[in-house]
Amino acid sequence: MHPKIGSLLSRFPRVELVPWETPVQYLPAVSEAVGADVYIKRDDLTGFGIGGNKIRKLEYLLGDAISRGCDTVVTMGAVHSNHAFVTALAAKKLGLEPVLVLRGREELRGNYLLDRLMGIETRVFEVGKTTELIPIAEKVAEELRVRGKRPYLIPIGGASPIGTLGYVRAAGEITSQSSDLGLEFDTIVDAVGSGGTLAGLTLGLSLIGSRAKPVGMGVGIFGGDMGEKVLKLAEEAGKLLGVSVKLERPRIYDYSFGAYGKIVREVAELIKWVETKEGILLDPVYTGKAFYGLMELAGTGELGERILFVHTGGLPGLFHYGEEMLRLMQKP
Ligand SMILES: Cc1ncc(COP(=O)(O)O)c(C=O)c1O
Image (tube, helix red, strand yellow):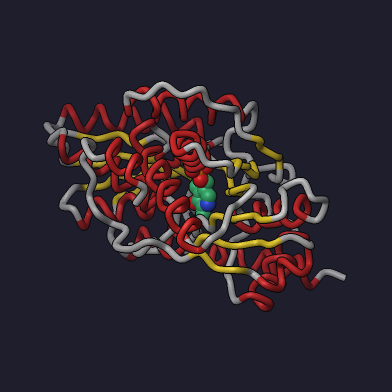
């Protein structure tokens, strides 16, 4: 761990869910295809449940919940939400009772199947947008309070200043690892949903004085000005840490392909190519779209000569949308 980051984070309660530093690997076939050196930070292997970026945020979110004496955790997301499933699983492991407020249809596949298999309490609503769940989840938390419970409400994607600390910590890990490997990255790229991962990287890299620039590939959860939202979240997390830094707004490119969760043939084809060339599994909602953006922009030189992709996990997305991907790829 980077000493400055380690010392800034030391006063925040954290439950250890990530038992190791995740590996950084070189991707030879991808690098050859785009004409730049591309590496991958394997945060799909964070080591709890299905892995992924949310585990790092949960270390601080659930640490905070426990230190406040909460006994119940309420969070929200789409029915295929990686965040919702791992939050509930980690809550259960720590002896807290989870309640998930989900958007979509109750189809038994992907993460929703896992939710049900693990006996997690789910409440599913057929609303149009994930953000419409916010008042519903607040009402659920209020109901729990009336019943004498002490709920901890986690926002969509774990994107609160506390959750963001998980990726401030990851920025420290990446910086120490790159220096051990003798690598200097020009850009560090990730999929942007709720924005917490990119906000944490932006703040962490800036606190360290790293020359690597954080770059986001938007997959379209919120729409609108994600750059502003990410910057605000990074600044709020900076306030929480008690530091004053002038942060640059990170570059975010739109790779939602029209809508959050829209499954498209180009991305399905790319997932198949990366899997068969590198043995790395991407998903069609987050990492597949972000990696498509990385390859397209790296090919133009836009991301510099040495690029790190943060693999944020999401494997169950393949099992949720696999049939649809196959259908799209089989179309003449
Ligand atoms: C697999 C995966 N990648 C990326 C993201 C986006 O991360 P963030 O919400 O921190 O922007 C999410 C969650 O939304 C995710 O589940």
